[in-house]
Length: 63
Ligand SMILES: [Cu+2]
Image 1 (spheres, rainbow, N blue to C red):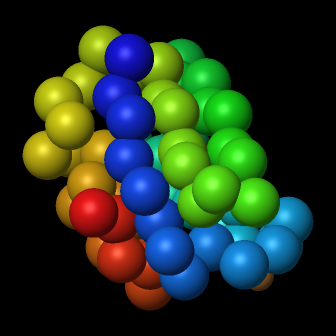
Image 2: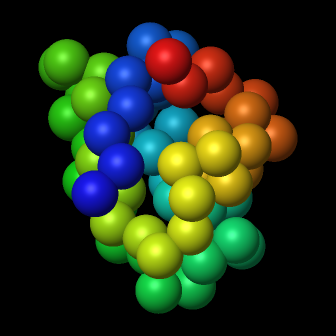
């Protein structure tokens, strides 16, 4: 389980964009987002670096 904070994830459209970017890397990935805490949990066989890179290319900033 990869746990990230994405402080610029503001609404459900942001989550959808991030979800699509992660799906492009790993179609098997599942994602849980909490818009109140800006926390993102990703279940993926890919590395955290790959997932981070996908989120960054979608225009968001994971920390
Ligand atoms: Cu948004």
